[in-house]
Length: 111
Image 1: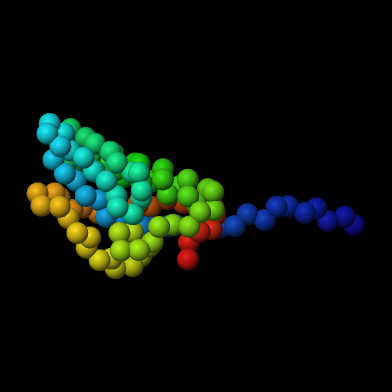
Image 2 (image 1 turned 180 degrees about the vertical axis):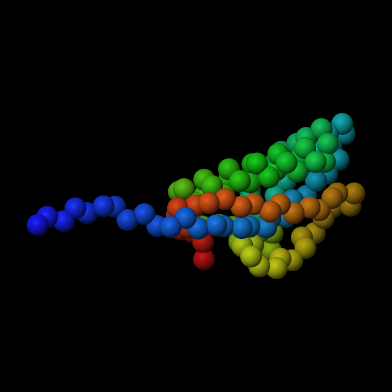
């Protein structure tokens, strides 16, 4: 009798994150950035568009971290199912939060 070995696939896990997003008026457009994600800067013609662009960029950013086994930048500006502190916000800027959720087969980098 022979036994066939099949690769074991980990069950998919849901990951929910909360990240701070700061939106500032930038003349005729709006600039949004996530302090927890260095280099993540986007814009939009409206506040909602800037927030949506930040959400999409953050999702790609975090997916790349997970895919490459890098740790998530957890802290005061980014949390996984934890309360977070409110970051300092420049005068005249808007503070908003992104709720990101996706299915991942690997959760390496999450502590």
